[in-house]
Length: 240
Ligand SMILES: [Zn+2]
Image (cartoon, rainbow, N blue to C red; front, side, top):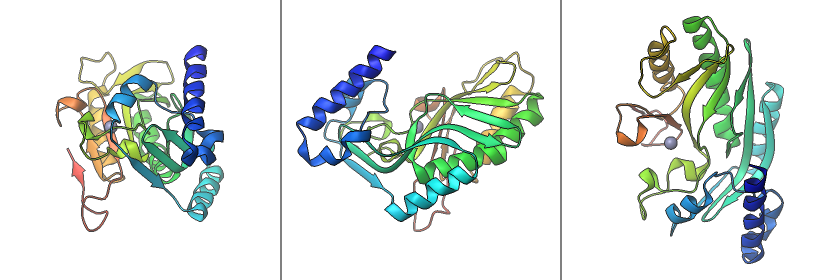
């Protein structure tokens, strides 16, 4: 794992050395994606720049800090074809029922990190405790920021992941270390399926797009939340 991280860092540094236009982002420009080869392929021809203003970012960072959120204010995150300005790496969300760590510390826009943290604190943690009698201790998130097109179709529009505006969730981990998978299965945990359903439905109040098992073949094993604006206002939802 250390060797992989070093390789990623090296490749980012080399890429930046031959790309002077992004040199200003060098200090924090470590790709967040775990599969650089696949990313480069998927990102072919894809260009996405997503940002927050400096004042919005500073206000967002202050807000997260005041709420006890554990994160790295990396600000700039870069992947081939995609640039995020105003990014954080989200490590844990403080809730009235203890901290919920976010596996892999995914990178995302601070604004999305705030939205996701609100959902974890207000809904994710209390619902999990109510349904299982166990505290939620970890969310196993897949990619948040990832430079790829929607449904990985080359030439298609950039995914909200490419904008740092989305997260994928594979499972929820309880205090007794049992895992509730999003993927449909016969769980040993009573009410696990009901809990995943409830978490998914409540997410529609926070996020503008919520997809999961049954939505389409690409989402059979994870929940996808994003904050894309689909219409004239952010009120329109894709909640499937
Ligand atoms: Zn997704």
